[in-house]
Image (cartoon, rainbow, N blue to C red; front, side, top):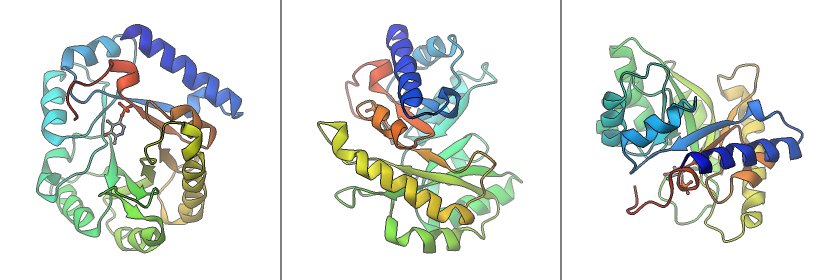
Length: 231
Ligand SMILES: *Cc1c(COP(=O)(O)O)cnc(C)c1O
């Protein structure tokens, strides 16, 4: 695993340089779903702090177990049911999968209760097919306008899953579209000087995603190994 981690960080740096970008502009979110807290601990020992989970229960269990690591940053990358909104507030550093007004309202209410704020990305369904989650690109602007009033949600950028592909070149155009879409909605986001966050690219396509502008890549199996069941 540690070998694989080093290899992946090297490939991220190479992809960034190929695109004329600084490797420090790219955040690697190590997707630890289905793997035990001990394996997270081993990657953390290398100085890595960003970890992603796609299920609330698994995230909160691991966060509890690793509570002695104060610098760890948790990314909730999966679909969130409204009735679980209360469980991630104040525990998650970046929520990648906001995709409805109803969920935004629920999160906002809970954040208000706890006097907290949360950094969020809106998930865009760029493939336009079979994916259940994410807002279609054509509806993004109106969604952002509606959730913009929930001021406890800090809308930092966009997230997407590209279509499944054997060759990552097949989805380069999806990543490129995401960059254009993000640029088009920048004024509706609460972004800092580094521009919008673009969370895109996984084990099989992260280099192409970085070449097309990803700021966050979510990589699981290429670091932790194959999953025996699907998280
Ligand atoms: C599992 C998962 C990933 C990582 O997938 P790998 O192919 O293992 O790199 C990235 N994003 C989301 C939303 C996931 O659920």
